[in-house]
Length: 474
Image (cartoon, rainbow, N blue to C red; front, side):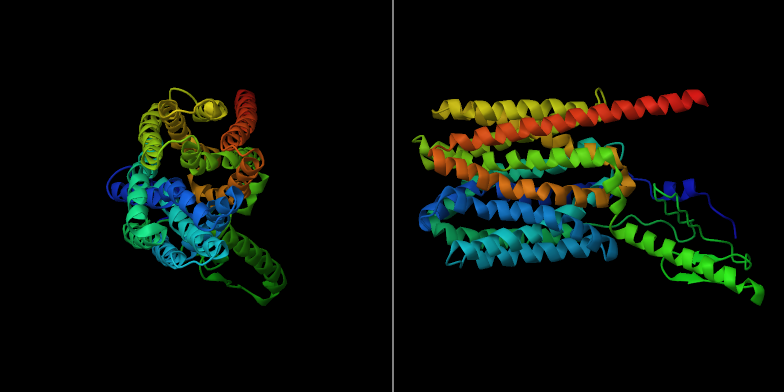
């Protein structure tokens, strides 16, 4: 039996950047739209639910924040389930959960029931669909990964553009309950997105190699005629062949060490806990936490803010569509720019986050429809530029082999920011009786998050410097 080199094994499953990858991209495009696109368009429901239950801005905002936080918290679970079963089955199950949750939410008699259905269960389903699909996209694309991520995330913009006025029309025609019923049926299409996911598979006769950065553990399929050595299988445990009885004590120790190694490798296959020792990853996760505080509040409060300034409901809905249209352009254009590799992707992200925070701080100055339209356009453009590359930066930090677990942990750490952001903004709105304060809070949070990106750039430069010195010494 001829041994294949590890390099050949990896080449066999190299990202194709084409072929069925385009169907994966289509699936990811629709998943972005039917998850985060719906969350951004939910501001239309916010006004109606706020009036129907006669509650505070903080109370109503918990619906969205619970959904966002649940997406982030459940992301590592979705990653582990995808590794254990398959990306396809997990996404299809998530789509079913989303659909049932929103339909049940249409019959809610209190905000608590909406928290449970449209908030928690819907967010749980979103995590089960979004996380595996984005992970699969990263496996299929490498050279074109920035552009692929930008195109996929464009689904959020396009469906926000379409769904915002559509939701307003459905609410006017069938009330917010009827609109939720229709949304539940629409989200059932997430199951179809799951059907498009086809895993990359290596040929059966290639060598399998499992690496861990900390200990450099390597398992290789051994030749059949090497009966004197210990044979290890990553899926079925270990079988040992002893040449004589005198070797049994030493073999028992070897067996224990091998079993511990097998257990550790199996755990790392589903949850790569060693990521917490990666300084760059942890710094980037702190960026994600503070960015999440300000990411979701503006989309939720833009329509209520416009309504509070006397702008009629359909014009207020148009503001979200304007934002979504420029968001789409921002994602595609700046994703293309990132694909050219003209500047370091992390530097590009830092610049757009600082600009996004500044734009949000200026928002309360706008009061007329024309002023808010300009704000919506600029906000959408810069938001799109930010979202286009933030997943790419994560993949560059940890590498494609650890991307699935890294995405899950990143979403988990970011979850508290997504949970607290809208309610904190709602708290200030209730205290100041001005929706503009919600945008101020979001702007400050994003500028704080930019400080962690500056720290990440410093760590990258220091890492490159140490690598250069090590190379020169040799």
